[in-house]
Length: 235
Image 1 (cartoon, rainbow, N blue to C red):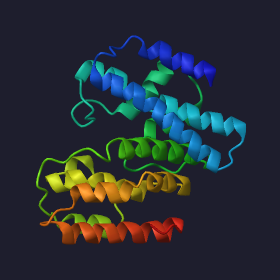
Image 2: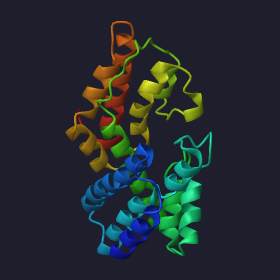
Image 3: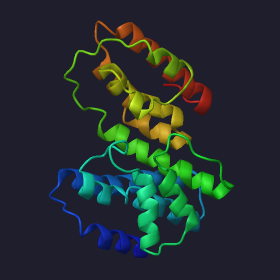
Image 4: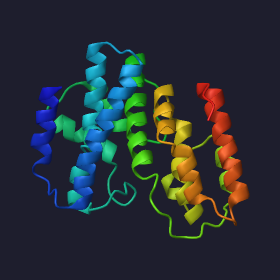
């Protein structure tokens, strides 16, 4: 992986780390690598695939850097799809591992096609590692708004669905959307890492208030039921 780290560092050195958004993405990258290592180790992957999982994580957001330089936004809707851009950047760098490039391209997509077994594995693993950092890094972020219940989210949690970015119409939907990431987690180790950080309890308590507690309690129940059924973990 040393070659890929040099490639990554050589690429990002031309971007302005004094921009807090670029600096955040640089640091986020290495945290995602750390989570990818933990998940890959839990799966007992052979060395070649363990290293590939780490490379997928290292390159997963490489498309963010040109996106931020040109548009200064994380919003793919308002700019470019950063997964597609990452795939393009790796091509420009003559990096030719098709599994890595595919994992980078699809790490941010709501729907992912089915590929061969190995490509599917790496797509799922990098998506887990990316979500772990996003969820854990922001789980204690203070919510200043009085979140009124939005009962359109009932179906989301009942049917185990993600909330599309373009459909976050209320403050409550915006706050609750990261919890729905759990429905797109693929590996038991990823759930264990979330629970080690007490993610569910901390995030739910930030959202819950006297006005919305009935709905938040329902969401908590559905999440815990799903984790038990999907991963055989009590929480």
